[in-house]
Image (cartoon, rainbow, N blue to C red; front, side, top):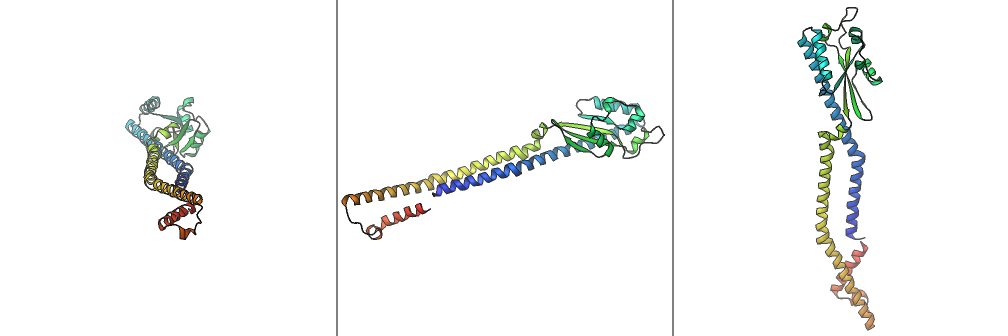
Length: 255
């Protein structure tokens, strides 16, 4: 087998293994990293949102109507992509509103367990974050038995929906996927850039030398047959130069 053929086989095998590793390891790992990063950002936004509500309630200084108007304004603002849900405690205190009720079993479960959770639908990533009662909440949220809502009990839920397309459009996705493919393409170009001079200046001249030497030997054999000369053993009949060329050819054939 020719050296050039072996070289191309090795390069093809390496690139094939790299492609398999990319498909079955790197791409899934990069997607998981992107998803976890986006989820972490959503969680931080929810924590910040909860703190903002705490500041609003503190500034209200016991004014329930002020707090209610502020929460309505927040829920009506389309630039704030968060929906609010009421707990049963708030329903008993202010009455039931259909648009503020948990909309599905996922939201009901989060409200009951008081543990934030993600879920994925056909189009969205949803995050349900329980807004838990703090000391400042106990001023306004008092039940029919004149007892304030217990600390840590969910007052309601904050729901955040993010389209699945946001994962591929994330800046993190650029660094983990797009930038990787750019670097991989650059690596491929470098490999080809190294192999091309080797083929042009090393392998091709060696191949041409082997072909020329074989042609010269073939002509000599044809001439010897035409002259019907009795050939001596190869080692005794050939000049030293021809023996060297013949050894090169035989070695190339063996390889």
